[in-house]
Length: 333
Ligand code: PBG
Ligand code: ZN
Image 1 (cartoon, rainbow, N blue to C red):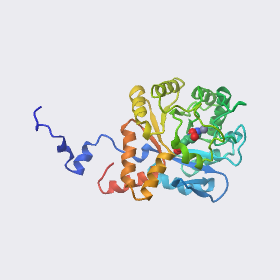
Image 2: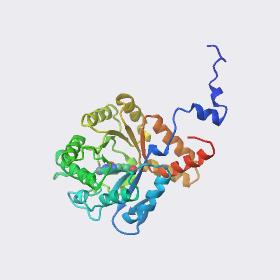
Image 3: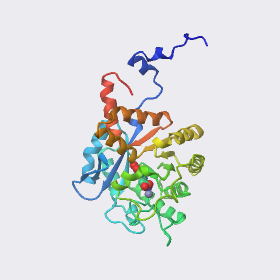
Image 4: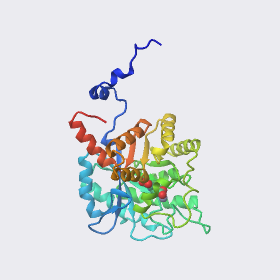
């Protein structure tokens, strides 16, 4: 070694120089912002475990969408809270369901906003599981595929730009693709929650969507957190079944999976920075224990660096605002 011929610190001496050699950069269009929608009027209900995140009635979406657009965010993902739940989750495919109406309202406000819909049964079933149950409480795979396909077609009919199945049944990407094609939606892409782990990090979401399972857990369909090779098999199957995007979820504890998926498949790759990840940051920030902005920017950057092309995140609006403000000061993230 010829020390000190090469000095790595030379490129770190000023913020401008650092910004010139930065390998990864965050941009508002990297983000997908989650929105919880429901029936009713004049409702904007904050979720207690997710400060700054709300459930909106359809009539309250306009201001929110205009704000999102102004910040440079180009896409949202919708989660519906139905008026009534039943064993088979029938509101999931109702043409006047909350998601279906929200898709139309968002496109009225901004025809260019990419509206993604989460396709799953757990928000709509009275038992809170992601599909049809047998008498022992086990989710029946193939019968559930029919329900999911029906829901996805209903979302496409309402104008969804992308459908995103999050149930983790086997064969659902293929089943949804067939149903969409048959209904004339061959150009509607599928964003598959391909490697979705059974995670404690979904806790606050289940409060927000009122979707906690009434008994048991989701471990017979969502993945075991110990498994990385299985995650690669899941992604491979979804690509074979013609998924257009693959997703890793949660994000922060699964950056190794995200990296391996991107390296192996070189496919449009999404990660979901989930509700529990958001809640932890918010709680610590409220206590003054961490610097929220710095922590969030570092966290989202790690996801992009690990291979995410797109990040679903509740931090999207705040982060887009910080990026814009700092750009005016010549600082990039
Ligand atoms: C529905 C679904 C869940 C999330 C997204 N879609 C919850 C779950 O599987 O229990 C979690 C999102 C989050 O925690 O932010 N299946
Ligand atoms: Zn579900």
